[in-house]
Length: 451
Ligand SMILES: Cc1ncc(COP(=O)(O)O)c(C=O)c1O
Image (cartoon, rainbow, N blue to C red; front, side, top):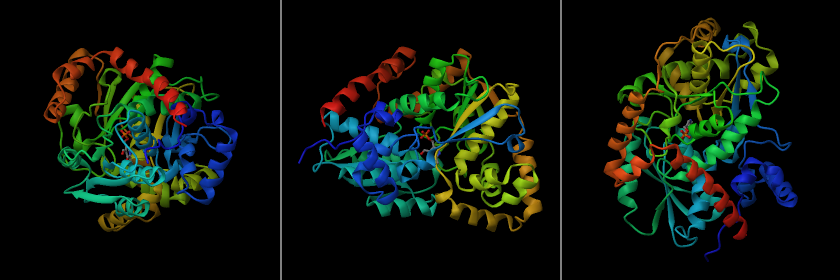
């Protein structure tokens, strides 16, 4: 069998209203009834059944700033995180290019978890065998999901910041021609998905809020796929500032830091190949434990939030919407709102990659570490972490000298994997990224034709 699986185009992921109505109706039904029905590929989108972007505008009693902080919610994607989008896009492009043949190839998914969950899920729906290569010390819920969707696990030692070992393992395994990696750190479908689908969804998300424009976009890169949304945001709102966030404990882009940290999914000790550093305006550091404690407050501190002035319905709605990296992105947005002195007309957009469902074990660990997490402690944390977020550790990366540092980091990271200096050089021009983006039209036409 070598039929290309039936799935959506980039345009349909952005605008599900353009999907054939019969397919769309079947997909929406399957979302509630059977998550493993392949028609769920048509639910890979930021939009809900009414065509609205899944988002929350954070209450100002939480953020303490005048600017509107709008968070897009990845938890509503099939498999529970938006990483399923890049996984699907990379697989379908591979099928279209004739590089990945159903029934013949086994898919490799190097990951720290959510991409692996996405790969496992997508391969289940698209009928491929899959092996997820990831560190052995991530949250337990991640391994459970991957196994549930049917992929095999190939574990390398360490945690989030040891992801380089997964790349080295993938590099070895792919010498077998029957193994095809969905290499999220290096392949452009990840860039294309986020620039087109996430970027334009961010633009739609601020309609009717503040001045309807985007003043800043914060995103903590793992693969640096999500931050590609910034390229599209900047194309539409040229004044927008794109801000990459890193753990304070692992500040690789800012100063070569390489420590262990607690924010799963980000801070992978490298400048990924698909990170367009030309459009990264600022880099800001966020303390990792603030993100874990911040999650504890939003998940378990509903009464504390209400006491602080958050409407109860909003506090209750927020309990399950974020994971640790989502809190990191929110804290980055608060920091930048202060640093850029944004006002009530201004919007900052950010992303919650996943929701609470994969972090119970992380909060159990927090309980063991802190012993006391009673309401008055959470109340103190609330003030310290959210309301009194500071503007330390923000560096302007617009000057050329800073860009050169990022280019140098990229060379150091990618020359060893066989990429040529000429290719890396070509990435120093915006034309490279724009022409990669334009390929969505070709792929969309071919995806349609393959049906
Ligand atoms: C929980 C979480 N947050 C953030 C990210 C970073 O997203 P990206 O890889 O698009 O940079 C990831 C990536 O896997 C993730 O799993």
